[in-house]
Image 1 (cartoon, rainbow, N blue to C red):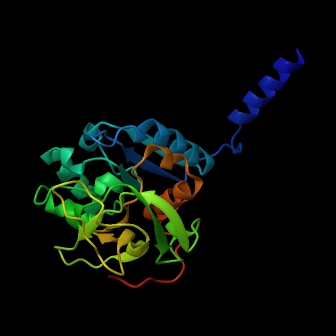
Image 2: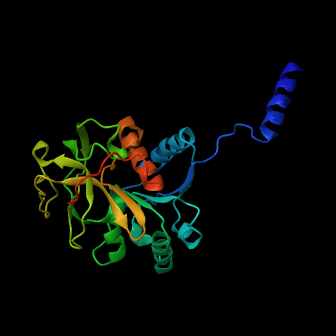
Image 3: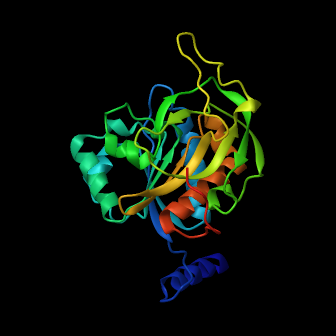
Length: 260
């Protein structure tokens, strides 16, 4: 009987005006569409990001279906492309996303989602800020923090041992971005690549994460995140959380960083 009374008390309290129920700070749309080399990460990433969303009162919508772009994107403070081949979006879906960004929407791009075939969607290439060239095999290297004042670097040491594909990119659209993370090319072998390909070097400033503005919105890009187990790594999750926080709100940044 006492247990029933306690349950009724909880239910009544929950229905009272002003009851202390958690309310979402903002809504985040995560699209995680599988591709040839990126699919095992999905259940792991979903579990971890949904846990972060509950912890930080973020209204997270998770989908693998590009049809979400046929609907209204305006309720979302940000759209996160998580290893998703963006070229899979139809012409109409692309137009809707472009309109969302022109209306003040925001975007976060993770790893594979930064790759779009040359000429397939130039607008999206400019949103990313850099264009993919190739990548060496997964190796352990030293990732360095280029901007200590950006939320996506708050949970990271200045020099961070990390294993990834360390994408090589170029800047055909001549866009300036704000570096957040770089990788030290002396700490791994950029030429360790598959037969028939030539590994490239980017020199002293090999970008791995950055932010900038596109249309009327904020954009954060991280090239890290190839393997499924990375989405259980606390430091990497803090990196993603910092990116989500800034992308959705524009808050938390300390000082200004140089552009490259």
